[in-house]
Length: 100
Image 1 (tube, one colour):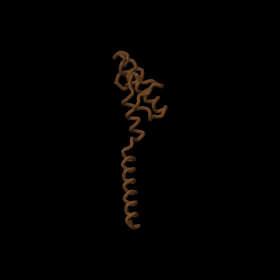
Image 2 (tube, one colour):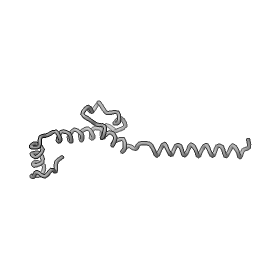
Image 3 (cartoon, one colour):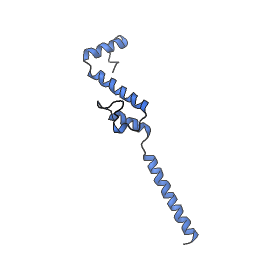
């Protein structure tokens, strides 16, 4: 083979590798996507030490915040309407649905 043929083959291979790398990089899940998936994956079985599999890429601080957020939301939702109204009243002096 001539030098020109080898140079063309190497150039085409380099371009193909660069395009493949760019496709993989653009399709990789961002950290924000990982956190969003984790938020959706948390359920009543999740604990500080028992993470859902979708939360493995999330930092401990972010996971703790997501876990506390999930717990507070579901605790409020599980309260009776009277207790929710009382908590809402203590929040701002009126029952207006501002809590929850």
